[in-house]
Image (cartoon, rainbow, N blue to C red; front, side, top):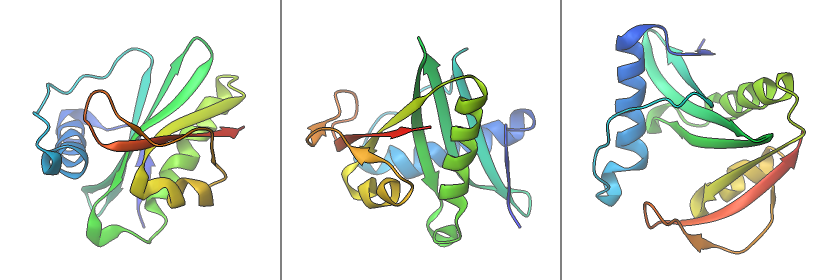
Length: 141
């Protein structure tokens, strides 16, 4: 069974950031950045048998909650790791008093977020930083 929580120690955090880069940025040629967790962010990592297999990050700014960097290693998909990670992020947002949450979902992940209760609130757009197609999706908490 997998466990989801904040990274425990530098090694687990490093593994989480490396996985995130491999799954979300390397394939599009996006340069590697120094892993930074901002004060308003809460990264979570899903761990199975001592290895990071999934991740997601919650950002809260001025009462708005935003989910970012949701990714699960290919061979571990369809085991509810991604959906459980998103649910944990939503729980953390609720505990901080946030009433709504949004995600700028990649085009191919739209169905995943829709199944979790998110609704599209706009049209596809090209992400200004990484250049891939995204769509903003929102959910009341």
